[in-house]
Image 1 (cartoon, helix red, strand yellow):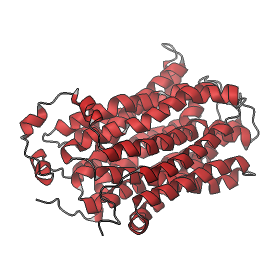
Image 2 (cartoon, one colour):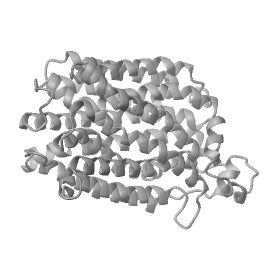
Image 3 (cartoon, rainbow, N blue to C red):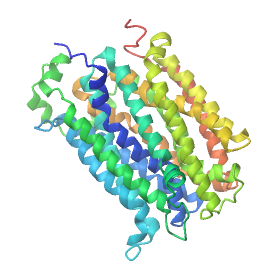
Image 4 (tube, rainbow, N blue to C red):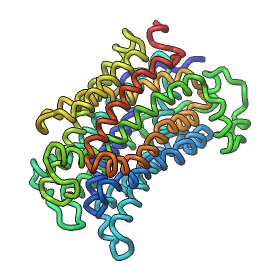
Length: 448
């Protein structure tokens, strides 16, 4: 028995929820550091607050992957998880920039960090089942397209999320000025709008996408085990699955490590780095109008790299068919690494758009190629748990960067955050070299 070949629009609807997830994720990535600084965090402390994000991924994604593999009910297998995750994430989005309203109970900085934790846990609850759903529903010859469409939607959602504060201020006149401990109105409204779009986009996927039953998936995978046997397995099996992970996953783990070490450094330190290096502001300035302008411009730049990734994602299946997935990914990472390194030498803020074009090319490939390579080496009945375990190699480098990034900025870089971005660029280049050690089980080139 073989899976049905899905139309482009069926694949589009299946991944449409990622539009809202990434819109919320982009709002967080571009603005969380700025919000935490407004609430009182120093530059060198930012990475310590951001450690919440990878920790939530490390804990949540494998557990959600394990249980979503075992779930089957009237609402499906994966859909209940990303619906609940979306609802919780939307609550975090609405309340994080308004954490000062809870100041009677706790300092706004700690409340804001708490809502950041809720958002990250919720994004992880929603995100992992979406990855597994592509592996569940698509045939081998459609997986690159499936992850590329997912990447395109991630890009479009991130563009909207990244540009929203700038647009709300410059098109609609909502203030981006702040007073001590109070987040600007343009950020508050951006997060509220992001929460609404997140819920709507998830509902599109939930109402339009059909999932295969466990029995159907077992027949596709030529498995003879009974579903009841599968459901009797325990959560502790995650550790056994980790030890038995496919060789391809082990090889990809190092590529993922350096890719996401670089991404984390970019997300955490871009606002202070650009405020200091391009706008000429001191490292302890987080409340001036110029700093808010720099923060809004970082949102524009993040939107640029996500917009580039959205369009590049549509080209990835064709490029991968011609060059192979590994070569495509390696070249993309090299371009992204050079983009990050170029930030150091750019003469003004407008030239940073060129840097972000390179980052966007790498980002599209990071979101698509490793998963397309990985999916071919995983059994259908283990798709969820292995996609969750694969997340270890995304979150562990972020945790390491979170622990050492702040002290490096303070003591090694003399509070000059731009050097955190330089290290991120070199990290991408290392990942590009390591791609060639990966074995792609069903490379597009080999299957055509």
